[in-house]
Image 1 (cartoon, one colour):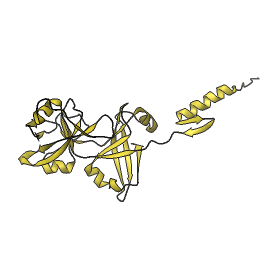
Image 2 (image 1 turned 120 degrees about the vertical axis):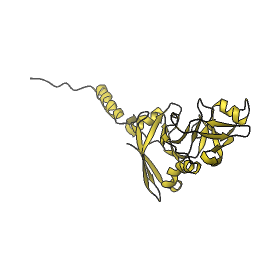
Image 3 (image 1 turned 90 degrees about the horizontal axis):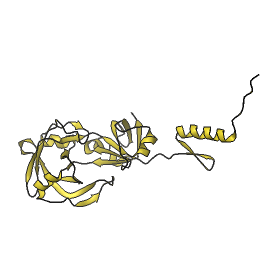
Length: 227
């Protein structure tokens, strides 16, 4: 006759903790404690551009350094005091396009569809930095101008997050998520691109067209779910 040997208390504790951890639940002073859902910040990404230092030199003068107007939600970036005019075909222009710093290794202009229509540019939806095969434009600054041969895009809707937030939502870098917006114009925005970096906080970026479509300004609640 076989006899079942019961595991000791320490073994039982280890087994229970292991199961709870896999389900996203911790133990605090012997009582279950569910990890609180991280707060979702949604910011509207208005038209802006990123520039290389070489292009800053052309537009603002040799050796010019961008000056900080305000820090953005992501501590790695800031809105600069400096702006440029973006000119499209047939001399259509949008003045006062904000530069975001710090300088990057590539120059890029990010527009909403309505901006692009106004300029007469057929912009593709692209991940920031993916500028191969994209249209260009003319940039005009206070000291000079330059023809940007490529880099005009509509930035793909996306969500920044750190590793802890990614683990909570069960997603990885370049996965997709959906966002439900409860507002006077309730909407579901699908296919947000997940971007994970150790220095980032949880933040969704959508452009002005998308924000107007779902009336984000008057939203009462937003919720992220896996796609």
